[in-house]
Image (cartoon, rainbow, N blue to C red; front, top):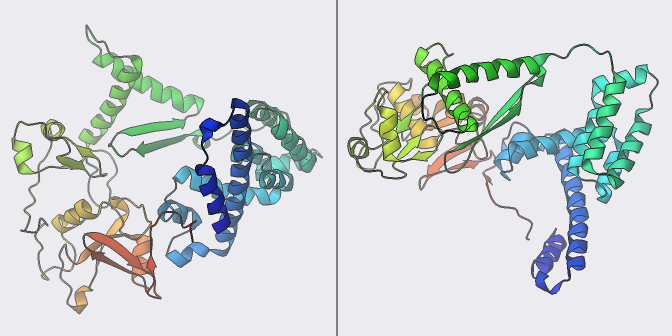
Amino acid sequence: MGELASALDALSAVDLDEFSDAELLDQARDLITAAHRVHAQLTRVVRRSDVRGASEHDGAKNVRAWLRGVPRISGAWAGDLVDHGRVLESLPATAHAFAEGSIGPDQVEVIAVIAEPANVDLARAQGIDVGAIEGALVQLACVGTHRQLQQAVGEYLAKLDPDGTEPDPTSERAVTLVQHPDGTWTIGGHLDAVGGQKVATALESVQAASRCAGDERTRAERTGDALVQLADNQLTGGQLPVLRGTKPQVIVTVPLSDLSGSHTAPGAAQTSTGATISAARARWVACDAGITRIVLDPDGLPLDVGRTQRIVPPHIRRAAELRDAGCVFAGCEAPVWFCDVHHLLHWAQGGATSLENSALLCERHHTKVHHGYRVERIDDRWRTWRPDGTEILIAATRLRT
């Protein structure tokens, strides 16, 4: 790994403006091949970690959770690494081409579908040699475009089961919500034909009801407003399932001076998902909201209730949610509604039911902490230790040695 780091250092020091256009393109081509090979090796390592359950060393539930929490890669990339590692064991030609750098993870993703159990069973029932199909697809992936590979796999699957059973529509639905550092959200996904029509019809009705003379919003803007209005209607109606004993609600925390003032004050308020919003927007939310007062001590922390209660009361839990914003175990991303309030010093051993003695932990990591792992808040930052006393560090890549 040290040699790889040195090679990358040397490449980064090269003045690219000294290259001709042809030389730049050649280097881009070579780097893509090298990146494919590194990605293939990473996939192998992740697969071996998955098989051995190595993530338990850092207290993670599985290697996918470890990838998201410790090296801090996206959930989508973590999922691809795990899934590709598993499927490549049954696709030797694809694995070989990937290791050589002839194809990349995008091509692996497309070819992998032929190895799904249902498709393998259909092929065997018809006497189709899946290995031969894989070989042909790998050849195409090495010389053709990505679109051509997608089309070839699609044609193969269509001929494999032309009269197949109608798929379960719920298996064709997936929606992702991604929050960005500035608090905004990106929505992506796909729906089956009927489910998509239902959503489109509901949004269309809200859009139509909100149209007025002089409305200059684009259709996309109207659809976004309609989606938020649907959520507003459901939240206000009070018919949604409860989350850990309380009705789902949008929570915004803002100082009283900002709430009662008239200034904009960017970054004055915070939502329960960690987004920072202005005082002006917080006042807008508060126009139609319940308001809960939280009194802080001189250190800026909500007051505790001593040892008189072992069960954490709602206001202490809320204070812990505001401070921790989710599970505090190193590398965990579990949201507040997945978490229990853990007594750092057990109540039976003299620990107070207070914010200072509390930590939010998801069910898995709450169990871990009761079986040798330890969390502690030091200098306003949560830190986690393994049973052997070593700390689980959430650090940048350790490629340099």
